[in-house]
Length: 258
Image (cartoon, rainbow, N blue to C red; front, side):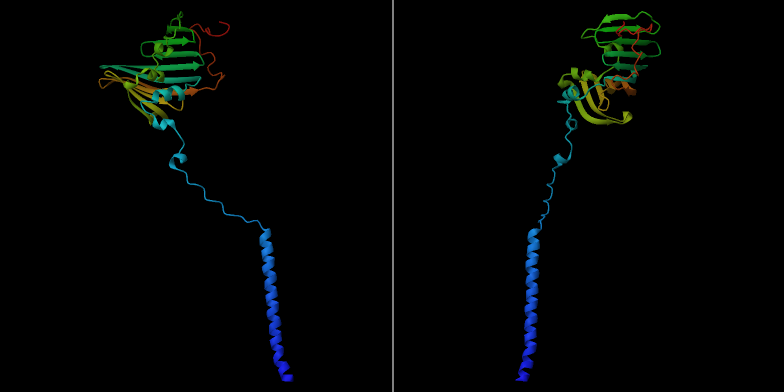
């Protein structure tokens, strides 16, 4: 019997070891399930939807400017600054004769002063919403006029403005585009209009809201060129233009005291 007991002992030890291993595995299994059930399951975020090309690019109505909508764009989206000083050079050509002028334009709200100078004379126009004064260099007595609806300071001074584009019939507009004018380093709305043999080309700056270049061609000959040479835009209530809107004798015609 003793040998038989000796043979059974290893078998019993193996059985006990196997039961112990199974018990340990069961403990890990159930403890792992309990831990997993108490943890928050984090799902991966769904990928962001791809944007279409139209969603990726900002909407810009000027990108589709045309002869049909350019007048509406200029009227609704382009505004002159309320206070500024603009300098321009104007070259007028007639045959072999060429006349060069410098134009200075000061604007503060409804007050406008324009000064046109060439080799012969200097003309000054000073106006508010209702009254206009005109005089030439050396004159102390300006001509005073009531400023009616059809009496434009710009026209009297000979200074072109982009508002002239609004007066054309759509059938007269031949080109309209959104361009960059390199010599002015400015993004512009370009408009070309045809009136008989006369072609007018305008570049309206989107940076300043002002006309920065204009040309007139008659039968293929360039007869008029205006280019902006300097521009200062002032904040509202800025004092930089104090004392500018004066008559030849120094009187501020549109001040409260006057």
